[in-house]
Image 1 (tube, rainbow, N blue to C red):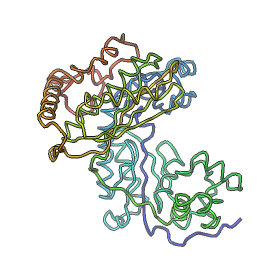
Image 2: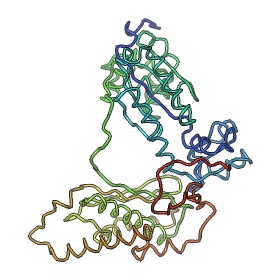
Image 3: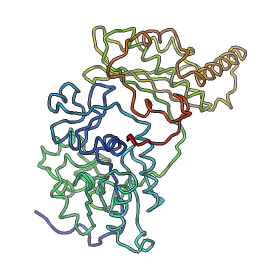
Image 4: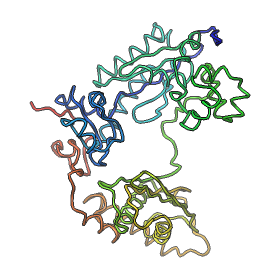
Length: 435
């Protein structure tokens, strides 16, 4: 086997991948010291594990397992509802720390991101490895969260590095050591190579990332096309996937998806959940002064099989009632009698600025203005009394649903600070301690 170095330079470029370790449960443990060192999972509202702490993982509890099965594996499991607002706040603080070390940061997801620290050695007067260590220590010191970091020449190599040692790991792969690192990495651990591609590569004897980069680029391109060739370059230390550093992207779409507290085979209830998603999406449309032209709806079955359908309207809309006939028809096409569903979703696209809207020759301006006024009135009522206080009649199927144990609110919502309400509250995480 060829073991010659791929390149001689150690760091012509330095890319970090920072990955929060069991992020959701780590946040819960950081804010509630009583949970420290104990098996904790989130996902109570869905009935399946969304995130498991390392203590829970050591007991065999994994993401995606039902709560019933998880409790059989770990009777003393601490099960919490997911507090996405607090997780988002801690995520923002983590990315703020990353930006202290470089302005070039990509927020890849709520708990992981990339950072280009090329050239920062002279600024901090320390090596790239020491910069990575300091970043890792700062996150732990300020947030009480551990992160795993990969440091290498490209996003792909850095991503593999952060997964290599968890939790609280630091894996450094300089350019002149790529040939020593890749033989240890199975193709299943390569970011971007899904299960089908891994199976296809195995049929040609490609089992590791090192096998992959030792095949000719033309052979990889023929088998896996352009994405495969880009991965080949990335694994060889040639960065072809730049960081996406946009902080504020213009809205390209608005989506609302909701998983039920318990899967349902009631067609009226499932339809009501779908319409509720549409209403939430339209509230956001109006809040951002947008209009939509296209709508897509999706239904996810209990076995996670998903069906979707969409339509393009003859004119843009802002209110749910404008698009209800279309939603009703799309739902009729997708719904399978006797099936049990766990989630519905709505995506609005073809967005435009409502403030620049021009009436067409065949539209009724008076009717449109009345609809706008109705939307403003609905939004004012819901701002004062709570979201979905006023809703379409289908929502009665939701409000009539009896509360379940899974519907327990997150701790932060049960313990408001003085002056806070369900609609107005300080966007700060709060320590769950008794003084």
